[in-house]
Figure 1 (tube, helix red, strand yellow):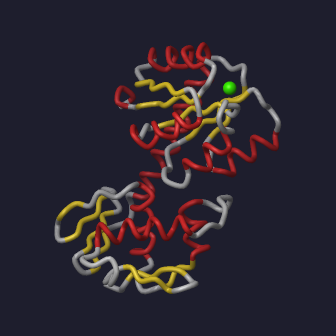
Figure 2 (figure 1 turned 60 degrees about the vertical axis):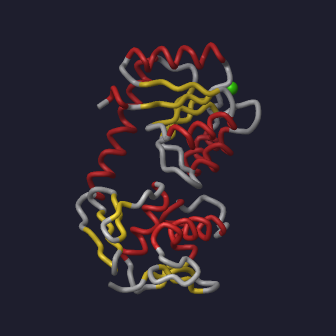
Figure 3 (figure 1 turned 90 degrees about the vertical axis):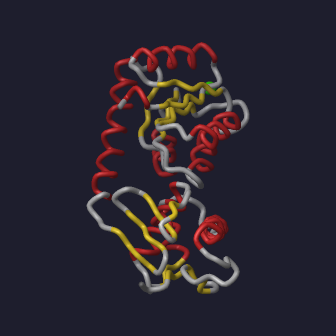
Length: 232
Ligand code: CA
């Protein structure tokens, strides 16, 4: 499985970036290199890597800002690599949604061990999620086990965040979920409470599942409160 695993490196120092790339390539991973926060973010969008190795000090934005921006649209595992061994920063990175933290200097075997550990954790989460069943609401079918959703049998192309959002609503069909509950469940408790991101994702989901997104039959807006999925 590791042959197919793509790891994106975000590190502005070319020699450090190259050393990491060589190390992970020799282990059979597919390495992609980026040298700034902006380039890294755009490669996460376009390549959907399986894991990100992120340096905290970048020329155009801080690594913290990169984590914050990534977590608005992706749950890709992130391992922070930094020379800053300040505990406050470590906690901040983890709170923002980084999965692990590696202090420079480190050995290549330690780096590879961290990558394997983060991977095991992600697999465990997927296993736990696969224990639950499918949800059918009208023409909409959500298969939590296979991470797939369909309308009239046609498979939907949802982003990972959209899939988690629609699954959360379906598992609570008939119940109003507040914006803060949705924010905390999907994005975690440390992301800024800007509910605009929920609105954007709901609008995208509606475009994919509703016949008429302006007059929805599945996901209803409860103004000022949150969202509710219709009961099966
Ligand atoms: Ca740097």
